[in-house]
Length: 515
Image (cartoon, rainbow, N blue to C red):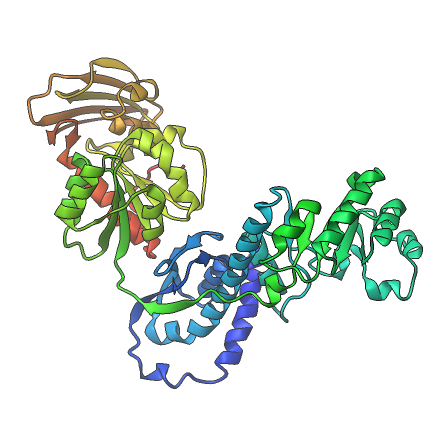
C-alpha cells in the first residue's frame, strides 16, 4: 500500500529525532535475534497496522504476524509481531507504540460514535474535521475511516467551504456565486433556520448547522422539508456534539462532524513485549484428524495450540481435558486468540468459517482441501492446503499431467467414479487428496472410489501421465475410519511449514500451484 509506505518514511524521521546519536541502554543488550509483539491492554479497534508494518520493513525487521486494519482487539491481543536484533527492537519501541496507540484510539472512538449515532439513524455519517494534530493528518484521517467514519475534507483544496469568518467579509449570496471547480461541492456554515433556508435556495450542496441545539437542528430539517428543499441538500450538524448527545442530532441530519474524534481521542493502551517465538494455533474440529494433530504437536518447540472449536461441545471439552487446549464458544473467539487456524472438520466448515478467519488477517491451514474449489477470494490471510497422503502432487502440478486416482477405503460412504471436481461433493470426507491434484494444477483428475481396502488401511493408487513420461505410486496407509495417519502427518507438516513461512522463512520447497 503506497500511502502506508509514504507515511512510514515520516516515521523514520520521527525515529531519527528519538535516536539522534546512540541508545546507551540498548548498547548493553546482547546482539541476538528476538521476537517482539505490540500487545493490546484494552478493548478497541486496531488501526495504523499497515503503516507500522511498512515502517518495520524499511528498518529491516521481519514482520511475523499482524492484524488486519479495523480488527477488534481485547486485552492480550497481539496487534503486530516482528523479529530483529534485540538492541534494534527496543530502539523502535516508542515510535511504534505512539503510532499504533494513537491511530487505534482514534479508530476506537470513531467506532463508538458511529454505533451511537446509527442507533438513532442507520443512514447517518459520522465525520471528522480538519482539527488534526501537526504531521498526523494522514494517519488520523485514515484511522477515522478504519473506525467506520468519514474523513471530511483532507485539506482546504477538497471542497469550497464558507465558514463564519468568510461570511463576515462577504454575503451568503456572494459566497453562492463564487467560482469553483465543477467537481467540488460547495458548503456553508449557518447558525439560524433562516440562513439554512436561504442557503438551500441559493443552491449550496451542504449546509453545516453550527453550534445548534438538537431542537434547532430539528426545526431546520422540518422547515426545509415543508418548503420542498430538504432533498436538495445534505445537512451537517457540528459543534458541541459528543458521545453523550450525538444520538439526539443524528435523526435530523445526513452528517454529524466532530473535531474531538481526532484531537481528543484517548489512545488505546498497548505495550511492546518480547515474546516466546512459538506460533499460536487454533483448531476447528476435534475428530480423528484433529485429535491426531494435537498428539503430533504435543511438546512442539515451534507451535502452541491455544484454542479449539467444535460444534460438538462435548468433543470440544474433551480436547480441553485431554490436551489442555482451551475450548472456545465460537469461531470468532478462536480467531481472536491465534495466528493460524487449522481446519480439521469438514468441507462445510471451510465454506462457513474460512472467510471469517482470512478477513481477520489470520492464516488458514485446510485439511478439507476440496472445499477450496468453492471458496471465494476474501481477506488478507494466507490459505495453506495439505498435499495429502498419496504422493505425486508435485509431479502433477509441474507437468499439468492427467491423473487417475483409485481410492480404496473400507469406510467410504459408497463406490463411484468420475471427475474429481464432480465426485468430491458427493464424498467430501474421502476425496480430499483427489481434489488436491486438481487444485495443484493437474490437467484432469479421474477418480475411482472403492470400498475393498483391508480393515485398518486406506490405499491410494495414483498414475500421472504427461508428455514427458508416466509416474505410478501406490500408498498403503494405516487408518482409522476415513482418516489415515499419513493424512495427519501431512496436515502437521503443512502447519509447520506455514508457521515458518509467516515467521519469515525464505525457502519454499515444491512447485504446487498458488491460487
